[in-house]
Image: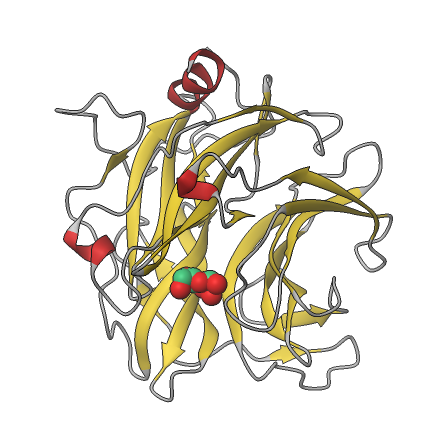
Length: 325
Ligand code: BMA
C-alpha cells in the first residue's frame, strides 16, 4: 500500500464503499452535495476547496452572485457533505489593512502551508491572474501580491517547501475561454517572488479528452510514491468544451517531473447534474480530502458550473492504475 506522507488521520472523511463498478473512482450517490441557490445572493456554488477544521470542515467556495459575477465565500460543515455557505463574500485586505477585494474571484484552492491556510484563486488584475492570500481563522483574510501576471489561472500551491523553496502549479491562459493550456511549475523563496518556471505537463493531441487544455486540480497529495494530482482535461466538440478528470504522479523532490499520468480520463461528464446545467459537460476538480490512515480520498469537483459534487477513490486505486494501465 502506498503511504500518505505528512497527512492527517481523517476518520470522519465522507465515504461510501465502491459498488457495481470497476472504475477507480466512484460518485457519491447523493450528488450534487451543493445545489443551485444554496445561500442568499449565491446562484451557483461550484469549483471550490475544503479542508479539515477543528474536528469538522471548512472551505472557500466559488459563488456566482445574482449579477453573474463570481466571489469567494467561506462555508462550514460538520460532515463535509452538508455545507452552510456564508452569504457575505470574503473581504480581502493587504498587509496595511487596506481593502483589496478584486472585482471577481473564482476557482479557489486551499493549501495548509506552515501556520497559514493559503487561498490561491483566479483573481482580477487587469485580467485573470493567480491571486494568493492567507488566513488563520477564516475570518480575516490577507491578500498577498498576485503570484502571476495576467493571464494565468489554476494556481495550486504545494503544501510544504521542497528543498527550502515554495512551489506552485499554474496554467498560463488568455483573457477569454482559453483554447489552449498546459501545466507549469513556479518556484519561490518567500511566496512573493515567483520564478524558475518549468513546464510540467501538456495537452495530449491523440487523447481527445485532453487535447485542448489541462489544469491542476487539488493540492497535491504527498505519498511515498510521489505527489498525487488530479487535473482537468478538456476536449473540444461541435457542442463546446468537455471537462473530464485525469490523474498524475509527480516526483517528490522535483515536482516538475511527471512519473505517471493516466492515459484515459478517470471521470467524465455522464450524470444528469454533470451533462446539463449552467455550462454543460463540466467536471472540474479543485480539492481533495485524504485520510492518511486508510488512503481514502474524497474528491470535490464542480458539476456543470452550477453544483458541487463528490467522488471517492483511494491512493492505491489511483496509483495502481497509473502504474498498470
Ligand atoms: C474554465 C473556468 C472554470 C469553469 C470552466 C467551464 O475556464 O472558468 O471556472 O468551470 O471554464 O466553464
